[in-house]
Length: 237
Image 1: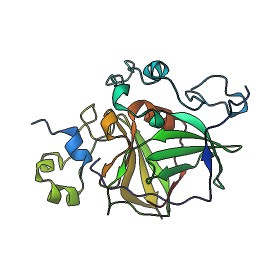
Image 2 (image 1 turned 180 degrees about the horizontal axis):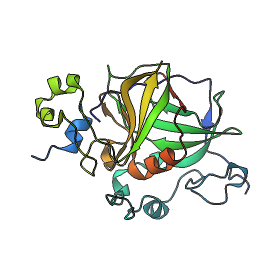
Image 3 (image 1 turned 180 degrees about the vertical axis):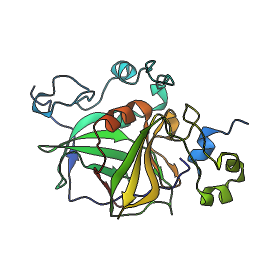
Image 4 (image 1 turned 45 degrees about the vertical axis):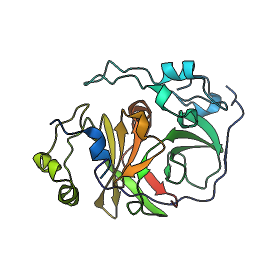
């Protein structure tokens, strides 16, 4: 998206598919440029295990969310590589449960669940030159359907964004989407976020000015389980 974003580093980890646990109108994309019940002890709502989710199941998983303030459309999963479907995976990490780990090299975001598992989401990430490696941040605040204000650096690069210098109201066309986590370091907002996108074409790409984007349905899940002060770690790109 078009806000700048940064994040931090985690301990060594190894990921593998798990055994089934017991139990005009400015173009949004131009701005981007610049629970599975029954997971036993994990208790993870809205996550699916296994090597790959079938597309029929994914269609239900990424269905429309009409109950939102601005109804979220269904994801066209035909445009999404199945490896980016949300799922629970084996993931060894020294980080505490709840920690968010961004892996820009592989276009994933992980939420550490503990006991050697994590929820994995497909993501878009910062393009070369806009990603900070091996840095640790935290969620300083969070918002639903937030106002988006382009940074002055972005306005300099993309003058068409100047019309929103005072802020763009929340909505489906807003680059931050339905939910956003604002990343801080040492008490200061980094101008980096983890945000929502309804564009599956962006997942698995490095297109942003430093932000990390998840599909709206995935972001609803992550947001609901991420309190303020949660640690966010950026792995090396």
